Amino acid sequence: MEYGSTISSFDYENSRGERLDNLLSRSKSYIGMGYRHVLNTNKTLFLSLGASYNNYGAIGSESSVDNYFAWDVSYLGLQGGLDLKMFQLRDLMFFAKISVASEFMIRGNQTINNDVFNLVGEEEFNNNILFLRGGVSMQYPITSSTAIYVNYNLGKSVLINSGSSAEKLKLNAHQFGVGFIINLPTCYCDF
Image 1 (cartoon, rainbow, N blue to C red):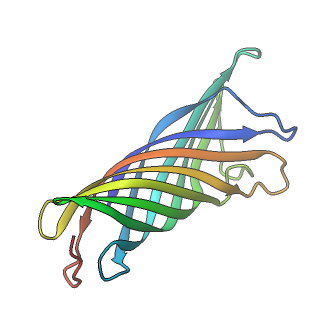
Image 2 (cartoon, rainbow, N blue to C red):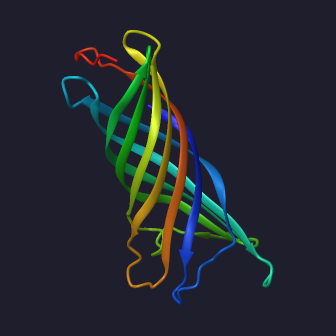
């Protein structure tokens, strides 16, 4: 189980190939839950599978036309990845992580000046996105069956199917989280 903060930014290009350069990052939250399984006998490689609820956003303005705009979107995702134990200092373990997630939007809105628009059904947002993430984590046992960990991931969407539209939207995200790993009673999963 994991909870944390996502600092997200949008990389938007309109149908003429022009970028929207004045978009700023926003901080939102995320929550995740999953299962981690040992893949080798010396317990240095782990397979992780899970689900997540991610919130992303961006904010910006265009002074030449006196516009203010903001996005607030939420995606539900399924992910798989690998954790590699790099080294250990006493009980503190350090891991490198990579994962791939397929996410789809479940809620979203866009604000332009004082008008709010629902993004559900909009081609640029209402599609599956594929997220690649890489990061590091630290894990420390607090009991014989429970460990606490902190996590950092850098993620980038690599695919947003925008249908027939020539507009392109990619998401970038830094995630900082804290979580718990609980050994299931029927399995032997030594920290």
